[in-house]
Length: 454
Image (cartoon, rainbow, N blue to C red; front, side):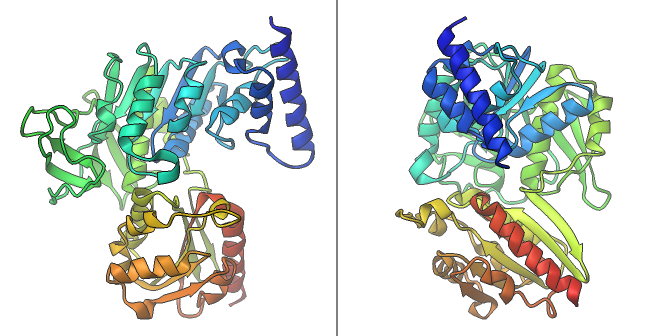
């Protein structure tokens, strides 16, 4: 065993201990130290018996946490980077945290979320047994550029021996990893939409023959049943599919290779129904008993940083993550809030990336690439944009036809809470960026105290 590797492992573990003593989680710092001291640290670190990686533009954290929760409820010991970073340093931190002083794994399974851009730096050193890919969509231009670029990275990085679980309703995702022959697809066959207009800008022409694509139906962006009239290339038929959704009864059904599995709805956002289906597909392919999956879902909950709901006095407060610089994720968050069966909502939007508006130059083009039309919904009576880019958000909302009388703005994130009229509105919805979780929690607490005092 390399002395350099042992030194890197011990130094990383010591740094993790020191960081935790100071009350910080240090999600990727120990791993960064380990890789700095030993560049092939991940290759030398022994892996658990089963290694599962989860990637894709949206839903990585939710899906990996769902898989981890089910496995733990089934009695397995699982390593997971749910509170850490999904880049190389975070992956290294998660694995070394559950390793002995000689680098041997303490747990039998690892479920690791991996950023798409980091694939070349991660799969170069570790080879997962399974990989789940939720979707490939437009994301931050400065990080992810274009879906073709991300597809190239993933196809280049992943070894052909890995079993891949892919979203068959995503025309891009379902055709990833052409050299990987062990393939499984998931999707949705319930709630078929009437619209068949392919409005996606991620994929317009068939990558095989160049013919303009058409759609049998589209759920959003390029998610649905897409086909090429030229060569016949199409979305893949799912092996695992959501076949029924009972929103009132909070149940949904997944057809698992023809066998139906009834589950409790964790969250009825269509994005999370896809995430749940992908998790179920992976668990079934691992050989986890369906009854154990069903039982685990009865107690399942979306991680609170992604979605949460509290009642305070007469107030009903819903918090939903909205990934800034990600047009599709932001539009889906708007659509979900608009779809909540509640009249007269007050919506506080805090989509603010602190790292981009502090000593930096931020591109706001993603705002104008996002569909704000859901904010026209009559149930949304008040919209408050809080943060440095509040005027850009307001302008984009106006361009989408939102009534200007509904909109308030403030540069101060915390001032957004003061603009919420808790006497007029009982249903408060907060959308926040993942980089301001602490600020969003403080704002929600302020609003909750106002509700409790009335």
